[in-house]
Length: 376
Ligand SMILES: [Zn+2]
Ligand SMILES: [Zn+2]
Image (cartoon, rainbow, N blue to C red; front, side, top):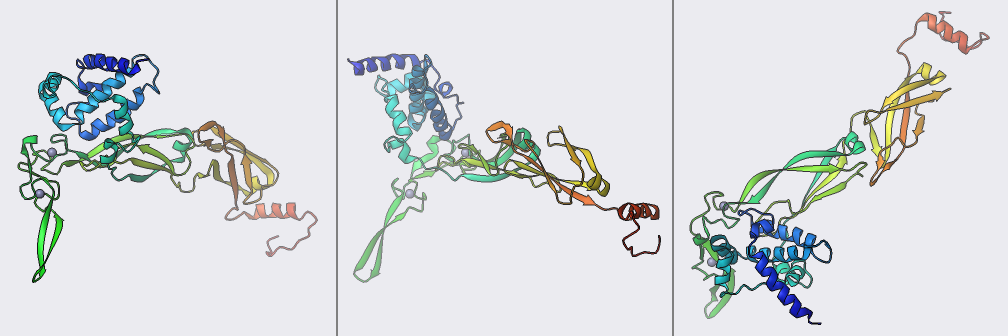
């Protein structure tokens, strides 16, 4: 059937529909959004509403709207016209007839379906990897931890161009906008080499800025402190990675890389230790307890009480295994590892003559056994 024709009509209809909507609102952005914000928003929203994935009514219309908004706002000329004169201005610019790209082709080329234009021009910035120490208590219970990252963001005044306004960006006179210049050099009489070098007037960009942006001083980027929340899942393994996509340093030259946080458990002095999902605890008991048995309460990482109970003799260094009192298993937090309690026996610093006499009598009931003192 004439599905192509149907699609064309559909596009015209949606074109009429979207003309009313604010393109920034469609991408959930403010007017000061940087090019990068626009890319990010398109990346996120176009995936969310792609009709292959999203079967809710209205998703396809939304997908087309998002593609259109991205098409206009990602093109600096079209964006400028739209900012000043709205959708009507765009139509006038394009000769009275709005022309939209096929939203599916656009999606395809954005996500690199065949090395399309959009995916070629994007270079990804460096990924920032940090270690984050988390208490075992937080790993046991799971936690949301607020933290801050100092990073560079594109100046929101000039949107990363470094110029006071778009009228202050001029084509470089030295290289005519090429970014490179041909240099002739005479190496020896009669021998001239020609080489192409980067234009030093414009640093190879082909444009020069007459009046730098007053907000960032022409630096294009600014220092910024951003707050994030790190979600630590119950039983996070050592080195568990939480990725904050596109949150590393911004630059006009790249699409911001990711911030990767690696979760490590804090080494707590003399306290709890972990090995995978096993928990280790050292408990100190007296000689009497080591010989006669005991009952003790151990307060666990989340405050619940584990009863430590031994009958008879406990050797120094003995390890008692308590089932299911270790860390929750990662992604299966209803199951737990085991708890290993190692017993340390302390001897008294000294004992009274009376106690000594009694112990002697207890250990050597028939008076046998030599003792090195003459107190008895
Ligand atoms: Zn130049
Ligand atoms: Zn600026």
